[in-house]
Image 1 (cartoon, rainbow, N blue to C red):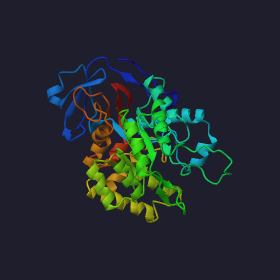
Image 2: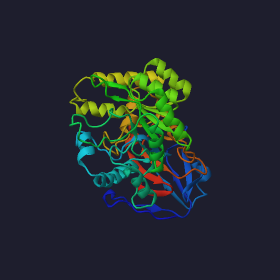
Image 3: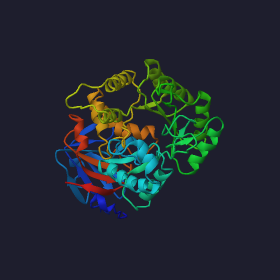
Image 4: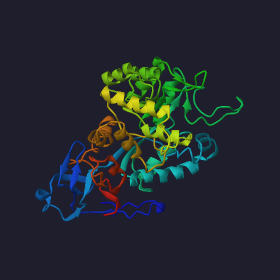
Length: 416
């Protein structure tokens, strides 16, 4: 098995095994259900067996027992931006307008590493936010073992309608960095192909944005324009994901054939029913709404929830009621990388059963993203395995206490 090395700043010792290693703990979550006193055997970069510890204990060359912990598949982040960091540190405009692409790429590699150390062995990174195709370069650097990080599905520049997105208030003769690629009409075919050609695994489109007469969110593309993007991407085997918070923006995106809706805050019951009917998954990004509210002055320790947080909670409960497929993704980058589990905690607080949350962040995300060899602990799957202290079925907060991280059979973190 090849030996990888990590970024100097991570201070993580990486270990590999060339023989059969057995991992066991009080609990094992296999991506679907919890088992007690189970074990998993890893050989090379693959899982070769899973079952009761007593049955497997004599079949391995070495054993690691994690005790009062839970073994689970490597978690999958559905909505990240490694090229962003919290807006209370530096505003989005300043990150996009004032920081070089080179600086952002170097920082982005570090942010990717923090995701991995938090137990997220795969991330879906939804837009470079003005840094070109730096997300593609970070992904390639991880694949080439130049830096240590999670598997990445990247969206490149993302697509926006002309005039809808980017920093506002500048002299119209000044060309500013928009943070995405603008296109309209039939030119959307060319732009979609261009982004794919530059390495995008998925295509992201902003189906609405805050460009209304009073700066409120309003739809951007017509249904016909969205269909152009989806049909072009699908011809290459790629999915389209849609940033959409308005009911009409969501409706158009769903009818156009996108695979997931990101945010979705103002969804009506009719739109949620349409999502269920069309098998479109929802990434609610609860943690981003929560974090931005604190940046705007809300003291979440002493003050009542602001209306926007209450509305997000209500929206999420309605999505659960409609049995919409929920994927776990918090828009990490808006809040600190490495604190991805904030989303899981809010999902639990807002009423989603912990077992369903664990499925969402592992097997459900893998299924929706068409990742057929991760997201579960089962024979012949890649050895993406993490260990959390305690029992996340009793308290989802256990997912914040990651003591062991293995990706592709390589141990990147072990506090055992």
